[in-house]
Amino acid sequence: QVQLVESGGGLVQAGGSLRLSCAASGSIFSINCMGWYRQAPGEQRELVATITSDNNTNYADSVKGRFTISRDNAKNTAYLQMNSLKPEDTGVYYCAAETVIGTIRRIRGWGQGTQVTVSS
View 1 (cartoon, rainbow, N blue to C red):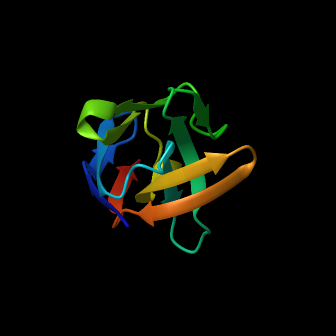
View 2 (cartoon, helix red, strand yellow):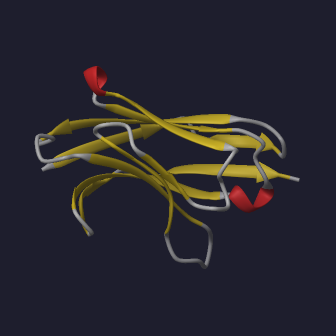
């Protein structure tokens, strides 16, 4: 079982920045991808960004050029740097530990979620 602990959310004005962190522990040997997802009120959870163990990244179109996902393998920690934040970025952000083999993606664990609120 994988445990994920997130930190770094908060309230920021539009145009501001936040950095989220996600520390993984437990049975992480099968994890080859870390992801960030978000869920706005009344909406489904959506993918924001992913990063593989060899640092291949993928972003939702809505955050490309503004958000950067990274990881520190020595610390088993993933980060999401969010710049030029917009009110529509508001939501609960979740970290996910994943195993990806070809086109098959399996979520091994979720973080508890951290609230990001962007005021206009």
